[in-house]
Image (tube, rainbow, N blue to C red; front, side, top):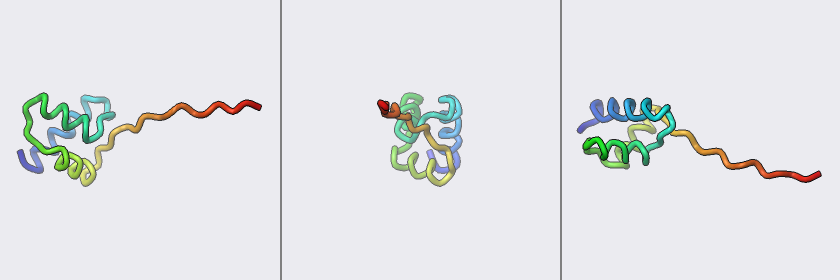
Length: 65
């Protein structure tokens, strides 16, 4: 799989995830679908083409007054 074709698959996987998957989870999903692409290639394509995963928020510390 090469650039244009790979980025199409990345966009589909990213959209299916509700636009939450980052490169690691997108790579995992692509392997489940038997799409051969290296994780670092997916990272680079996502960085260059724009899809971004959602970073989980951590709980805000509680301040006692």
